[in-house]
Image (cartoon, one colour):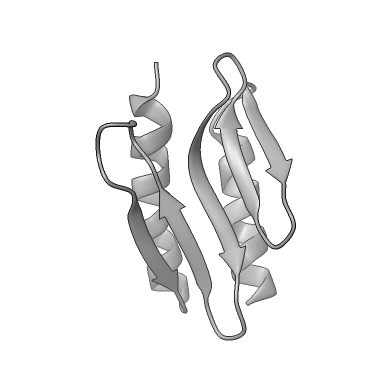
Length: 87
């Protein structure tokens, strides 16, 4: 799972210069620095990676379990969309 986790982490930093990594006890949360609104919460688990994606405060979070490279590619699309939706 570590290579998939690192892939997602590096992708988040590539989204823009204003991405802030907030390391928490068992997970990493990525925010936009201007308004410090989080858009993705990544939590490694034993056999998967749990990802929570938030586009805005009014919508429910989307929760994904990542187990393969194919899952990562789908998650990257959703993460980029969430990042772009924060103004």
